[in-house]
Structure formats: C-alpha cells, structure tokens
Amino acid sequence: MSGWPTLKTEKSRIPVSAFTLVELVVVIAIIAILAALLLPVLARVKEKAKVTRVRGELYNIGLALEMYSTDYAGKLPPVRVNCNSDLMTHWCELPVELANEHYLPHRNQGGLEADLEDVFNPDHTYKYAAPGPELLNGSPAGDYRLWVPTNFPGNLGGSSGQYYTNPKTSPVRWIVWSLGPQPNSSKSLGTYAPMSSDTWYHQAGDSGVITRYADRNGTQFISQ
Image (cartoon, rainbow, N blue to C red; front, side):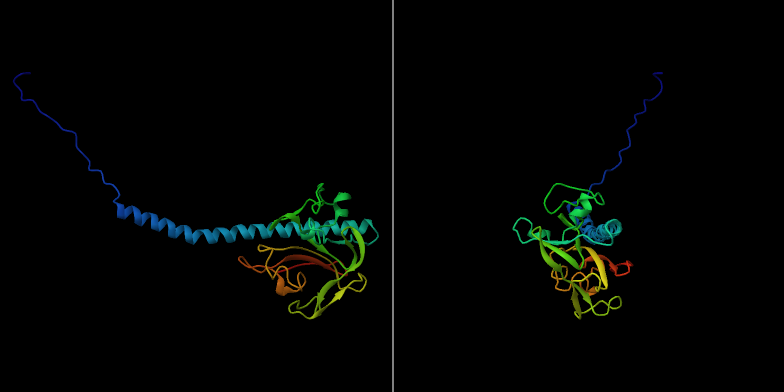
C-alpha cells in the first residue's frame, strides 16, 4: 500500500576474527613441543612391540630346535661361522638344517636359508649357538666354544665363566638370540655375549641382546 512507509533492513554482519602472525607462531611452537614429547614415547612403544615379537619368534625357534633334537637322537645342528667377505656378517646364523627339514621356513639365499630375520637386524637371521660341532665356511672346524657364566643358572652377570665345547658337560644346551635394538653396539657384540646378563637388553632405549636358552635338562629361560 502506497500509504505505508517502506522499511529497509540490513543483514547483520558478524565480525570475523583471524589468527595474527604471533598467534600462529605460538600454535606452531606448541605443536612442535607436543610432538617432541610424544615422539620418544611412540618410539619406546614401537620398540617394546618389536621386543615382544622377538621373544615370540625365539620361542618358536626353541621349539624347532627341540623337535629337531627329538627326531635326530638328541643331536643339535652344527654352529656356522663364516670368514668369507660375502657371508662374514652371517656368523652363528640359524641352522640350515631347520629350514631343509621344514622346522623353519626356507629361503634360497646365503646366510638366510632359514627364513626368519632378526627384527632388529634385517637381512640376517637370529643367532644360534651350542657347544658341539662347528662349520667354518661350510667345512668341519672342530667344536664351537660356548662361554657360560660360572654361577649358571643363578647370577649370570660379570665376566667369570668358562668355555664349553662338549654338549655332555656344558650346563647350557643351546642359545638363540637377537642382537637387539642396537645390533652393532659394543654391548650386543661383547666378548661375553650372549650368555652374560651384563650384555642383555633390559628396557626401552637400551642396547644389548635378547636371548632364549636351554639348560642341559632342556628347561628354557629368557633374558630379562
């Protein structure tokens, strides 16, 4: 109706705020601090998960060794040591016999015939040792010398102990181990590794070996 006044309306305007440069820098700094705090925690969790996996795989290797021994009149596979340039780092590899006889998966690759890699040492198997026959570059080379602490099976720390070559007199029947999260550390490759508890891995962030071993009666133990 032309007699009424025309009302004009305007849309309400809501002010929009934006981050200032200083605020943005502060947010980025906070995120960086939180990441710095969380990353070590995540790394430790990931390491613990790998350690759990290692212990499980060492358990399976122990079962394979005992089944092999049962099938072969109490004997264990020989220990292999290599001085050839291409296989030098594959010392004490898992027994080829366990793969050939289908106790463990098989792979057609030197040093990895037993297809079970050390979680912490890719392209290498877990380690295996036992007093008894030793093969050097595939040829008989006497008996392997396994160092065992004097106080076995009690306190296994320190450097007091002796080497055994005869499985009938050795208090340790066999040992399998991972070189641990820092496979090239002096602790993992120490003179008294893997039997001395001083060379064992104990907690996240630590170096040292992770072991499973059996005494002369077949009772199995794990490093703690």
